[in-house]
Image (cartoon, rainbow, N blue to C red; front, side, top):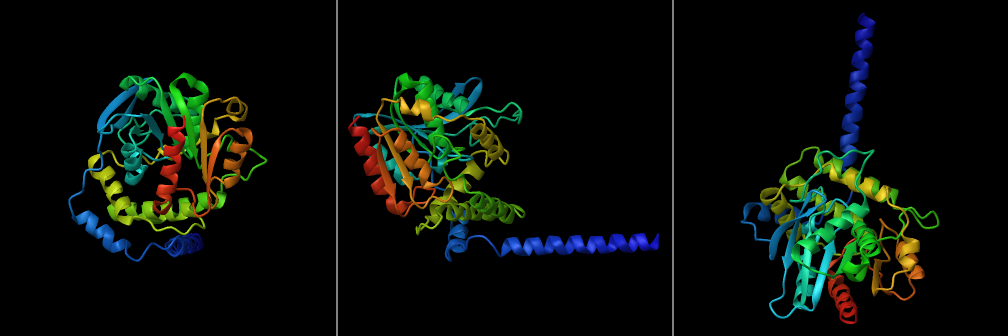
Length: 345
């Protein structure tokens, strides 16, 4: 019995050492946050938060799922409507304010919304892995918003997974779409002939989630979002707007429902159960714009190139110093190209 107890003590000590070693490893790896991060986060936390919702808010019913949206309308005449579809695990606040402002000031009605499972939309508590919702279901969420607002057609713009949803919307609801803008996305993320989603980047994102999620709290959650943005930059050299990130994260925590820990798995399920859209995309006749960063570490640039190969009539914008994000320094180039595309449709 004494020997058995000694063995258990040794095993216990080894487990503690492994845990400590793993904790030390995590806290000494990952991206280095900008030097000013701590001071900016403290300032944002201790000051009143600005209002980040500028438009009309509402809810649409999509197959019994409640979807929150914001509708921003230009003060002058409206040239058309743009429906923005965010990427995996992200809600409507993921859109940079300067991006929204540029499109509204160009004369377009701009709608952004929370994916099911995020923000103020329903969080899908009864989701099951063997019966997941699909990208096609998520495309219906966007259509439901158009129905709610009485909008016949819209320009559909999606980033990353949002680009995949936008493609599904164009394919399955062609009478509701004026044009397609697909940013840092793919027509078939499982195409064996193309580089796959970066496993290394995914691991770095998981490590960041563990590193800042163990303790939790507002400060660490902000740091997690900053670290994730740095990881998704890849080799691109960009400067993050730390104050904007901190403000959006705190607004989500304090004035909305916060962040859903289960949604990443749900959205991955929707992507995993999607089929190739190549054949359907080849048949598209609506104006299309493909934008992709050459430094994208998550969905490789080759996926953007493949879309243009399939749709030679589509326009494109390739950006050297852009990873898997919409950087502030390239905002004018991106929005100018989008507006030019919209005005020729």
